Amino acid sequence: MTVLFLAVDLALFFNSYVNPIALGALSWKYYIVYVCWLAFELAVVWKFYIETRNTPLEEIVKHFDGDSALLGGDVANEKSRQLVDELDLHHGAGNEQELHGDLRHNEKTTDSTIHQTDEGLAEDLKI
Figure 1 (tube, rainbow, N blue to C red):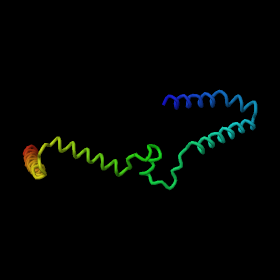
Figure 2: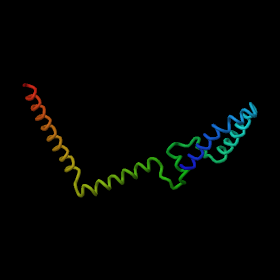
Figure 3: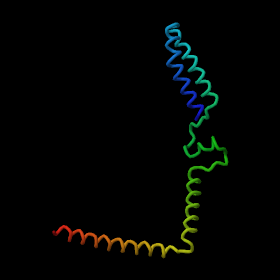
Figure 4: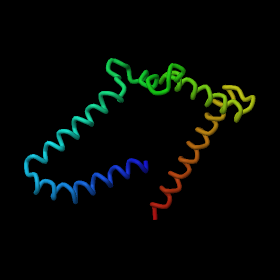
């Protein structure tokens, strides 16, 4: 990140202080400097950037992390396995019926609470 900020600051300094002086001295010939700079940048991109054409998005990770990298679906499956393991540890030996029973009980409690609240509001509005 520091290198990025340094590069931005140098570019701003160059653009603010050097460009006006050089453009005034060399006029249109100064644009040749920019053409050379763009050619240099193109050479760097051509040499060092990785070609990812015709590679599915999920497999691009292999270009950066190697063949042992987890692909998109594998990562999701691994995360879901970890989540299930954590939930199993959290709930202990509870089975699926107990969990659904608890949910149904909570729904009934919530429904009755809402009904009681609605009756209370109706009484408050009767003034």
